[in-house]
Every structure is written in C-alpha cells, then in structure tokens.
Image (cartoon, rainbow, N blue to C red; front, side, top):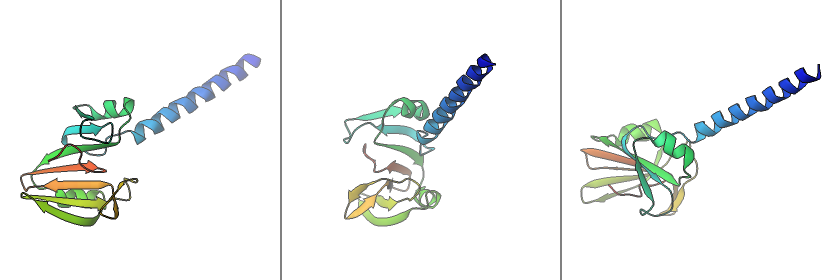
Length: 138
C-alpha cells in the first residue's frame, strides 16, 4: 500500500512538471509567422540572432524582442491580427512606420510619450513587424 502512495506521489509531481513545461513553452512561442525571424537578446541591434527555428531558440534563449518579414504590404493585416491601436505614424525614405499598442502582446517601451509594443514598417513591397520595436532595421 505504501508503494502505491509513493508511485502516485511521483506521478503527480511528474504531471505537474509536464504541465509547467507546456505552459512555459506556450509563453515562449514565436509571436510572428513571417520569414527572416530575428530574436533580440539585449537592448541594441548588436544583440540579434537570425534564426530559422525561432520556437526552439526562443525556448532556450532569453529574448527582449523579436521580428519577422513578409512580402508585400501586410501592415493593415498585422494591425487587425493583433487588434492593435496605432499610436503614431512616421514616414521616412518611402517607408511607413506604424507604432502601435497591442493588448495581447503586453509589455512595451516608452516611445514618443506612449507605450509601444508593436512596430510595423512597410515600403509597399515588404513589411517588417517587431515587438516591442524593430531593432535590426528595415
């Protein structure tokens, strides 16, 4: 009888561990589904990891942000997907930058007097999105 109690206790601890790892994996899944995925491991563009396996790299590496690219102008689609509020727009050298807040992303950085956690840039032929902002550039 005592052995069964021990086995049940070990099984319960194992189940808790598995559930915890699953929850952790969900919080570490990639935000975007685009190409040329970049993970930011610090606070500058010097600390960027370009990866084809963002789910694996993000699982084992602490990241401060991430970004991806798409062909064409996908800005409106991304704003809608993340239910983002556009805080301000900046146009430079033919590139339109949307600085947004998306409640489902949480967090963010202070920029222009607002909390920004989604940055979308597009020149019409290519779109880049990053959270909290695009570190590497367009």
